[in-house]
Length: 145
Image (cartoon, rainbow, N blue to C red):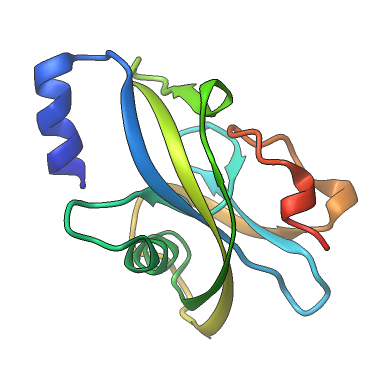
């Protein structure tokens, strides 16, 4: 995806891009939510990313979770689709995006000891009452029953 988005960025610069994307809701046995601390200093987020051209949303969420966590997952349901002005974000480099996010509940099938990309600083499970602020304002009710 980096080459596709970078090609678009070469044409439009930092202007707003509307990006179809996915995010994963993954719980541990205690019901805590898995979050990813971004290596870029952006804080905490769900494992998430843009859908690549030709890729289904289910394929995208499986790929993104593997890259960012090392976990093999299967998506079990769609928890919601989010977008609009609240899902706009400006990255530290000035790139502006507005995400249209399909939020998937995922089940972990296997865990590797490490992730394969450089976007992740750390992973941690959080209880509902201990959640850090997220860069994208998902309603907490979608994460916890």
